[in-house]
Length: 314
Image (cartoon, rainbow, N blue to C red):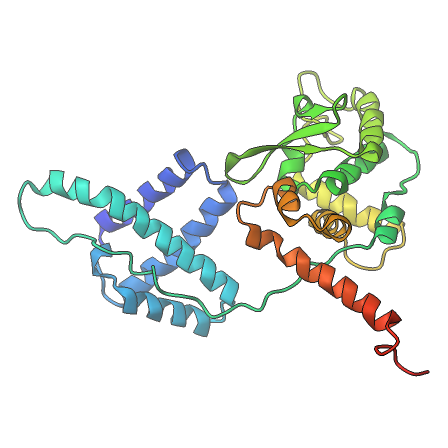
């Protein structure tokens, strides 16, 4: 690809960070996907983005599939290409008109990835803990400040269905224990307010009393580590896994399992899909609907175990 074409990729990434306010994780994923597209274009001897058509994009997806990429990863790659071309369609024509001053130049007139679809991904249902397993995990005995902190953060993960990134990003000012709510900054820097359960509020009050002995002066993070600074995501993952082993749980437990369990248990009890969507901060209700499949599995197990025509004969 020409230097001018590569400069558009750099500009697109700056746009993601400044205007779209994408996370660093999303930026790196888009960078990898567009780097793969650039390599494909170089093999196909394409020097400008205007030369890429729908057949090229289909071939790029097929090449990715042949290289062992999963359908979900190919979907993400195509999403990156669609977003990049949407950016080019908006920004490139005006700049080309200014630069050429009447001379003819190649223009991008369509999004070549618009109608290209990845192979259908097999939808994997999220793993959850049942209510008894969750109760056992959260029965952390009283101990030092770190144990108090761990119980508080795990209670909050389950009580409010937070993502790991949302949990570690919480400030002291985010929490309002009087009204039992917490203000969360989710994906795309979107803010939402979610309730905090009674058990979580009790655990958080205990942590706030112990926090002063650990936190450095001026530290605003709600959860801090041994060094007195904001607790990192990796430390939360490690501590959650350690507590799961200590509490006798045999399956791998990670922070996102609390969010899955929160959604599944809430939907089981209420059936309010739209409410669960708002609590989770999902932009699209189809993302939340995966938990209805979990709820149906639960009902199917009850049916198989109890219906006279479903039970197996002894």
